[in-house]
Length: 172
Image (cartoon, rainbow, N blue to C red; front, side, top):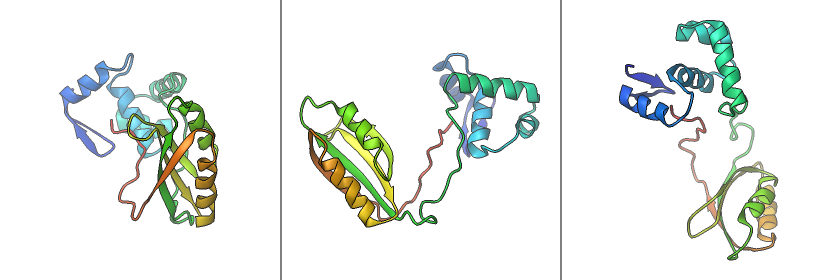
């Protein structure tokens, strides 16, 4: 196994081997297919097979297996929040009462307007939330709604002044 480029990053053979040893039934071709789909989710199996030097049937079978295992969870268009007018970006640190059902609170938050990401944390706060909305009114409504959830003690807002990088692809 030689040096490979995945998603614009270079991993040497030892790094690839260590990575693959942590995941059952995954090989270098699987990683290359995943990386290709992350960079071009609309690519046909023909194009992927051609670029990776394998057959269309192999790519098709591998993708189906990766989907079935939940490694590939879906396909979506990546859109620019800024160009769509969603310029209001906040990260919220949420502190809850001791003994609160943090996962349940996180689930409630995940369904609110503008909520992009919800993470349960081991930190001086319990939940980290990323919100992106078109208006400050939407942001205010969501923040106020979070503050009214039972067992939420404190909501600390962190305003994004400038986005330098936002990429949710996995570096393979």
